[in-house]
Length: 315
Length: 284
Image: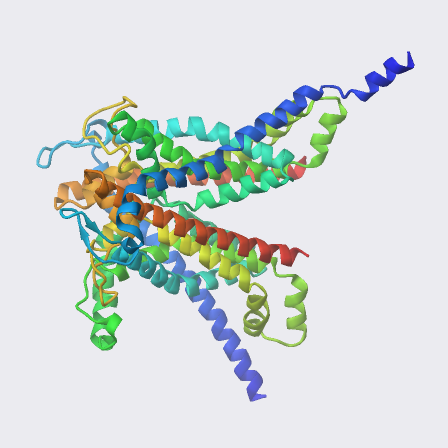
């Protein structure tokens, strides 16, 4: 009798079903990691003919000839890195200013409205940025930015003329606009996570608003802001359509940032659907593989930086 | 004293700088919206723009109805996969997400959000277009669902996490099994937040061009067969904008206006739903 009662007590109400629920949901949650792994492995497998045929030299040669099947990725790697770098240089000061503005206390209604507007910028499809950049931004930039800069600072190699509408610089401008929401939203969260006490101590010691933010708040949030910048860099590296529409699509490493160029993503976007044979599409997929490996690494580093800062602040 | 005046001046200058740069950051949004509306209106004013399919240059009455239907179909098919899988993954992360496996899932979905969409298009091409030997709407939907998945996972997780522990504990105290508490109590309470995530993912997928280039490919004719090439709004904008014909430029701007309107309405709706959710969760 007592044993029977004990048996009944030991057994939870519906153990199997509860466990099955956990197992089932855990199984479904494999989808995201599985998609990521299969994605990288499939691209690797598809790029294998090009990887074995061209070897590591593929990454450092600047030639692209589908007729003689002679391919090298250097101009595209260069274009991708330079457009993203210039975009960060333009967007970082603006993004930091926005995040400082949004993280301030008071006037929450206004700050929320401005924050929402900047987040809406992230919702606009990249092809719409592309058509806007092509017909509005590029002519504006040619007349009001590129031409005066090349006239006055043209003696500096990378700022020399002749200026062109479709250029590295125009692509960087539109990229800067597109990464601004990422940059300002993530930095705002990091700046907000800076302990209040730190800010108040600084103000109590007589520091002005600028001294508090420049010498106390920003240094405390430094790693997180760096993380936000790297996260934005990841977005800029992988952006395809808007860049394809304004970069000019020329297979060479330009001397000046006002000349047309090419990026990894736009090369794939423009040529993949016309690529025939084995090596040609495979070489294009290798460009995609390089792009995704770089982007994933950059994102991983950024995430770890942002997380570690926020964790440190929370303590 | 003059040093303090200088310090105050520097601080005020910095504040003005921050305000000016914040104002500058709002300019692109205004300009993009303004030019899209102004340039898109001439095309959108004609009702046949929404009723007809594309016609060759020089023939009046060209429309984008097939692209609107195509975008809706492809995003719809992608949602059928990505939303259930994403919601269940998100519920798992919120309910049991303390172990090492859960942190891997979180990391994978955070990294997947940043994966270049063109690479996801290449992947869909390799696994669905090559074996079937032709472009198809299904392959585009597969690419879009991979793009949507991480967005749904993370927003579901945070929406379920907003639900106070008291609700879960009351359910369990009444003797309900864990799965019923989770699916019949927690998930309905978190529904607005989950819907927000789904809507954001839909908005993101609807605007993507790069993954459609070698999957859906585009199609000037009316087609609702998911195993064949299909048109989409972003593809029309991309291809028509780069042609030399003004008629096609007008069509591209018109399609861009339709696309932006769709995406912004979905986005604003999702924000409104989320705000209600946060208020409700506060009352629970």
